[in-house]
Amino acid sequence: MINLGILIGPKGRGSNLLAIANACRSGQIGASIHVVVSPVSGSEAVAKATEKALPVKVVTPSSTNYAKELLASLDGCDFVCLAGYMRLLPAEVLHAFPNRVLNI
Image (cartoon, rainbow, N blue to C red; front, side):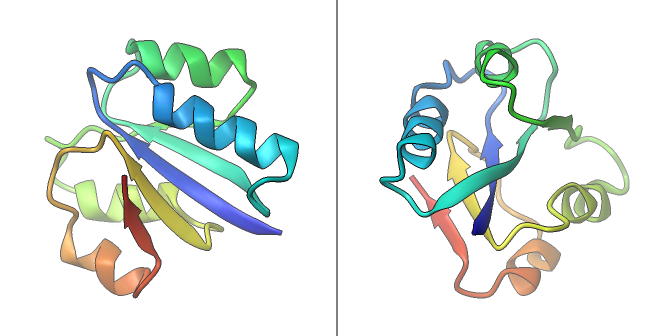
């Protein structure tokens, strides 16, 4: 099974996240969501991820160790999907997931 890491934005409603989660659960996508990473804990998308029993990690972009914390949160992921994530990914993340980052 392919493990997905989903990066979401701070103001997203979670519609793309839910679409991916539903497609994984129905078998339309041969993958499972390993982690949802958000820059904030109180967003609507985080609430929806929690309702779906998806693991959520909060990684604050202002952290001095942002790239390291982001990589640690994506440990065990095969692919990274940017679902409303509107920041530039640190180069370390792109190097860790060559040709395995999808921006929707």
